[in-house]
Image 1 (cartoon, rainbow, N blue to C red):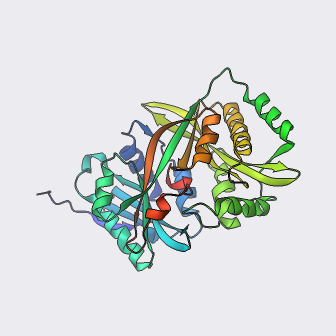
Image 2: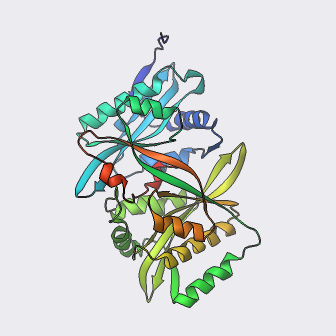
Image 3: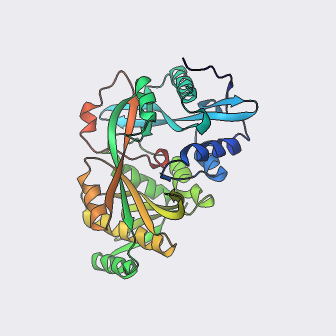
Length: 342
């Protein structure tokens, strides 16, 4: 029988982020590969997110020390003709010396109650398909809904992508433009048009994309580039520079996100966007680049492989939603909500 552990259960209060960050880094720092949190990142990611609700952050505290926490945010996701309001579970963390005492399971139960109170359609989270935490999620009624692939590129110092990218664009009469407040409206319309066919995507507002794509530059290096032809946006992508720890070594990684083209199978434009982002990443001294795509997405995988990426691992999106069958959706390409996956 598991020995009892007394603790106080409560929601987030301003100032908790310092302990929550230490908790997250202690819990995930034992992995061979992880992205450490900073207070500034955490505040942007949760407190400044449109629609932030402190009641969606669940904390177990013992004698003034936070020993476990779970974060739940809300997002809309469209599957076929059905739009679901999902609570997304993030940063499930417990102090390592207290693993196995049911703390994460208890807080996950609270997150499920919160979703029920909010009358959400279900919950979603992302997990290592081979990890121990997946067993906890299965016991709470989550199912595997979709696999996502992690791709990695190790930079070859002999490459000269700057010249390669310029030639690609000159040959196709294309140009780059960095995303700013001035062109955000046009970008939002094109971004939504390109992603609408993907399962799990719901059109983003200008306010949401401002938070997601422009505000992070104040917290960590982040830039989004549009690709134009004859003055019109035909694609784009985002580069974020994040510190990761791989097998005990800290290094800067380039995260390539939201790479899109208005024409769904326009591999040539997608490749050129990727080359531009990689060029920027090399200029910032990143030795590796990472990207995440849904399985069954031949267009995305082909574009990545043409620019030197290799698939290295998987992550699974798990969903708890008793009134919806995800089997047909799983056969199609899904939108990757990057902020929940890294």
